[in-house]
Length: 176
Length: 202
Image (cartoon, rainbow over all chains, first blue to last red; front, side, top):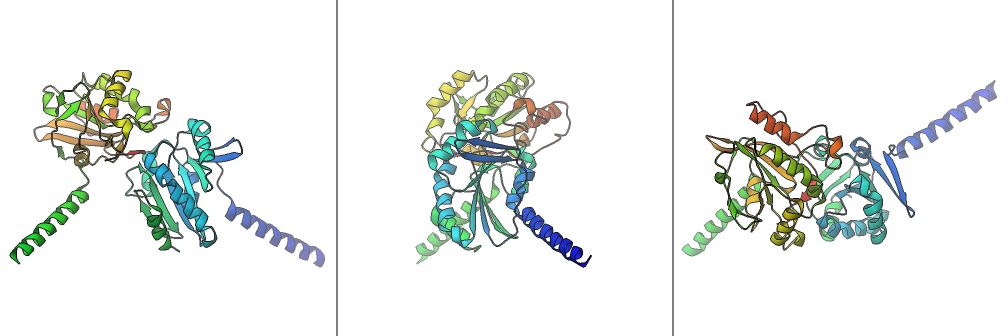
């Protein structure tokens, strides 16, 4: 009986630990998973995306809203890529939220990612009723892109503007 | 010495007014818009005052290159077809600087207007002076104005509807609802919305 109790106790602890880790690492269920030539892109509605805007850990998240058709976004993309690479070991994570049209993921977004060899995490926000979520990202956002959220825990800043690498690095350093 | 003081004052005023302009961020709901005179794709200048019989206008900042603007082209044409005869014509304005976005040149505006058979004026904001007065930040960006004794008063600012990607999935036709309400002498139900769009390149 005693043995059984110990065993079940261990089992419970094991379940609790694995359960907790699955829960904390678990990303929300995507609307759709696109896959082409080894590149995977998950799409989310805003409720799903919010998970990536509300991480509560010691990493600084740099969330950039962009699209393949947005020229100033494409111009600053290399800086986000550079930041992601150079700050990899300093708990900085770049998430590129694409606002490309969902029907162009396979024809435009993935080929673009492949051509530019993007290394940062890329998600697709597929939620056409933008009026319902733009202000949930930030009250001041007009909806123009590029736009960027930088946050660490509760400390958060929103930028409706383009960046150079130096400007981006300067902002991120304020969080680290 | 005096001239240095004068210079300092001039500089200070200059800096302050620069900030004031930046802070104002354009027309708000209820503001009367200043008329403008901009060149249409047919070479003629167009002003709001030219429309003697209009009850108001659907002013849309749009352009050639932006996929969101392109996605809305047919809906903009439909808006003009429906509402110009009811007194609310569409006035489209391209706010982009072609030096920054070569696809939005005046010559290419002419091409696009012809290709799509635009039934409304498609005006070039030469020098990018008009869009900042409105406070437009992206394309497409709509301002519905109503002609009143006070002038052309802003009654709606924002998106055309709630689904740029799929017209069939639209649930809320914001601009139509606004104009319909104005035509019926009612309050505009939703007066301001936000949408994703291409930032204006000035």
